[in-house]
Image 1: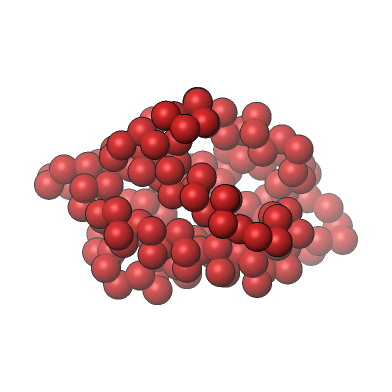
Image 2 (image 1 turned 180 degrees about the vertical axis):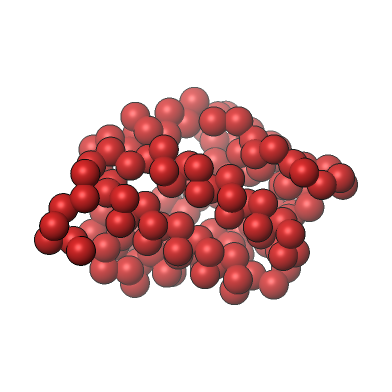
Length: 137
């Protein structure tokens, strides 16, 4: 995946958000994921490494340093997530956690939060690999 299209001026979305606010966003996001009954079972109990990888991915995805590529190679997002049953409901739950984390991170300007949410909405849809299970609804 490439960096999201920037509709505003003033540098990349990474430059506008900044590494400190991005780190706060990821921390808040994974606290919400850990508490979400649909998502928590897909993740390890200790989310430290997962959060580090997410922060590295988002840095490059948003136009900042390509930390994920440097540390782990190409993200291959869909392939890396195939072992996990990602249903449309789980994709929506993931995106809802991200939206809540964005709202809880006032250091990220509203326009930048909207731009990031829109870009991650496309990613969430792309990650779905399992049909909806009636037991999850």
